[in-house]
Length: 441
Ligand code: GDP
Ligand code: MG
Image 1 (cartoon, helix red, strand yellow):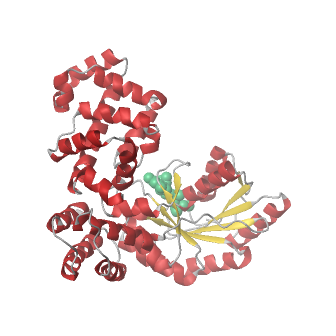
Image 2 (cartoon, helix red, strand yellow):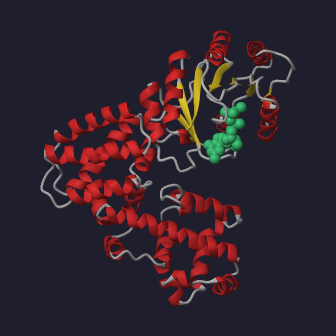
């Protein structure tokens, strides 16, 4: 995998005095292969590697960090730069109604994203939003949007059978003006593949609707195909931004890097689930971490370093160096998390953590989660804490009873511990907590 490959590169570099041009070129050869494996388009990889090499060779190696850490930092910063250093919000600051048009292939997530954006505009910015579906190809596509609208309490344009997309768009604009809506979201039809008829339709709608935002919705799991799609759309319509969907899946973020490079437009949002609140402002630094295969280990360590005192950090680093992270350690971590603003603040930083948290929340544990987990670990024997793998079904029932929780909760706790142990191994690869903290300082 990408992280393994980078890990190998950094191991090789560790302990050397400074980054020579040969060092950088050697490391970049691996980075190049790794990025290709992460599904970043070849021309994008080429220019990225070129840029970063130039940058790295020109730079002094800081005394407090290893060459390997230095390369991580430079590659990371390079990725952030390429992804667009600052995130950008929707541009709806025009005389109402502002028109936002969603385009993309069928199944990319246009309709879902339309509803997500509508909900966000309504809830966070108090906007009056009207949604209209221009998808007359797919049966029940307009009804799908109406159903979503009802769920989030956002108005949808009444459906008139037999109307063409351009006419629906006209009607949406008229309605919006008459009823004083702030924003009109136009959800368009997709195709399985880009074709000229689709492009003509998009252009015709754009001419009459004059959108301030034309967002290309792309499935982040689509890999190289997504690059071609983005290329085609960006040549034919005036895109203003990109939304990457299914970022909750196991796409490593390679698509994000390609999208930005191919369209030249900012990635504005990331879809992170099927639910209508699963939309996030695109965070370049987080995605850069993901491309590097470190989750947000970097920022986790950054925050942890502020709170955990040096002795704790060293003791933890020593344990990690031995590849041990048992439930006693998890318990200690939970205490520290509570000090650092709770699990919510940490969600999404550690790979797997977010899923664990969502799962816990679904089980209704949310608020008291840290307390419950502490109680579960408290109900275990010292042997179980040190070697969680011995916890069988019978033991789980006992632990659940003892802590006033359920076997399901115990399972989630154990899953979370496993995810964290994996994340800890990644920190170890980076030279330990102390080394990482030094790099950030
Ligand atoms: P459209 O054909 O482009 O309008 O795509 P839809 O909005 O109908 O979405 C197709 C499928 O993808 C639906 O099942 C959605 O629930 C799902 N989907 C959309 N966005 C996301 C996302 O960010 N994450 C996940 N996991 N599923 C998504
Ligand atoms: Mg649709």
